[in-house]
Image (cartoon, rainbow, N blue to C red):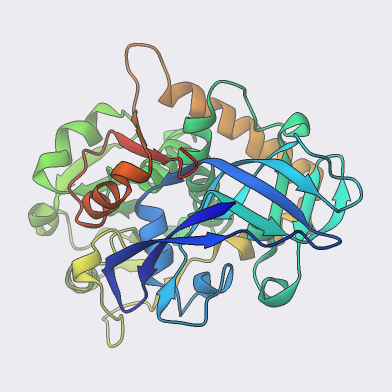
Amino acid sequence: MNTQTFLVKKSDLTQTQLLQSEAAPLQAGKVRLRIDLFSLTANNITYASFGDAMKYWDFYPREDEWGVIPVWGFANVTESLCEGITAGQRFYGYFPMSDEVVLTPARVGATGFSVSDGPRGQLAAVYNSYSNCAADPFYAHGSEAVQCLLRPLFITSWLIDDFLADNSFFGSEAVLLSSASSKTAYGTAFCLSQRPKAERPKIIGLTSPGNVAFSESLGCYDQIITYDQLETLSASTPATYVDYAGNAALRLRIHTHFKELKYSCSVGGTHVQELGGAKGLPGPKATLFFAPAQIAKRRDEWGGAVLNQRLAQSWQAFAQRVSQPGATWMDVETHTVATANAAYASLLKGQLSPRNGQVWSLSK
């Protein structure tokens, strides 16, 4: 049986190919899963943009110039030679952009398993865990598209909110979020907005003119401004910058304009064509936010059960708001092999409506 994998050229993300290969016989201790649904968002483009620096290419490594972007999705076990895992079980986790994957499970239990063989043993544990849908508190049958689109992004959003609060918002009176219409940014804004106004900074979203109306319609920002309006904000306001755009010129403007910039946090790279370094900036160092570090901190402080409970509760509230009848925040668009290249290109070029959510199935 042939498998299909979507590849991108590491040095030029505009170049892609759909690779067909013959599935190898399953070896002892391994499982074969059929991937039937995964999401593709700006977050995945960030994985590719920082593939070498953050080792995202190492999850499904290749020995040539082509890379496999990791994605979040759902898959069914079709064959198992691993004790404790049986055919037909469904799992949520970090998969390749493919219709199939072979994994070597470890620490198999009722809630799922982890993977730690090869290069993955040196990578962040949060990406190596696979949840059994039958025992997953985040899982809800019938809303898998929303789950694989927003669940991984929301966890990052929740952790950013938690990190900022954990540090008393660095004494800031305003938090600026670039790419305000992006899913990770508005997830963060949602979490921040759930806190009493007296206990949090003002939430300011930065976006392009075409996305102002959408960003304002979400109701989780205190103020939305366009990028060219940045300098209208008071330069003396103690502020924190959470950077989802990765736009080097915008970052410099923010660091230059705000004389009381307390903290600068780099999260993503939605502005693919404007990415750049952060050396020599005025004010605080632009620090990369690494979600697994905050997860590890809270797991040590709270314990895994409490952390998962708090995450699940927040996720359910967010998912309910996103899917609210008559006022949904997202329109889901499904893609197969036939539309994969065009769908990827439109996302890479930033041509999609902020309401758009892409889910793929290369098995169809």
